[in-house]
Image 1 (cartoon, helix red, strand yellow):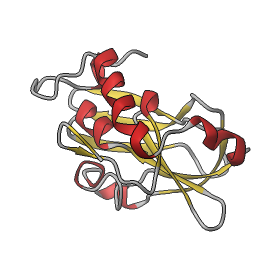
Image 2 (cartoon, helix red, strand yellow):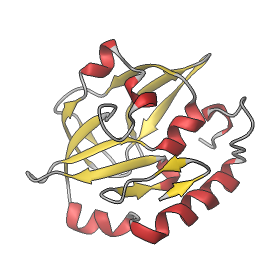
Image 3 (cartoon, helix red, strand yellow):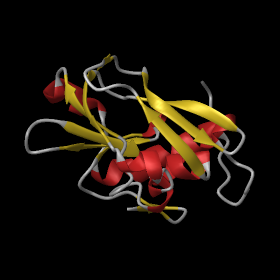
Image 4 (cartoon, helix red, strand yellow):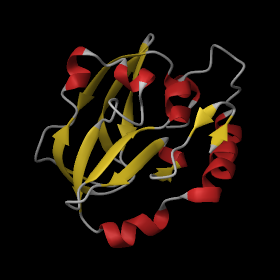
Length: 155
């Protein structure tokens, strides 16, 4: 699925208000990363500092800090869970988030508190693009405006 040239792979769940994707792993863990829309909002990412391993994160709380041109912002988790892994490659190459946000640019992995209930809140399939279109309107996102960054996001 595409929106203004942004791709949203079909094998993920999406949380438009968080600009995050979620992927269920075979062991029950959940991998999270920034969507193409989130990358467009932040612009060039210079660093990602994840929460420490073993830390319990509540839904809508920070999973780490993303540093981008002249600012930093918390990336917020759309689900509650315990941090079981973070992408160590981002320490040396944070631009992986920009280059491959759905692959090598993943951010953290959580052991979710209640995935079966939580996954009902996230979008898949045909609902994804309209939801991100609506989120872009709420954020005042203009994909043709090169100055658009996460600073325009509502906190």
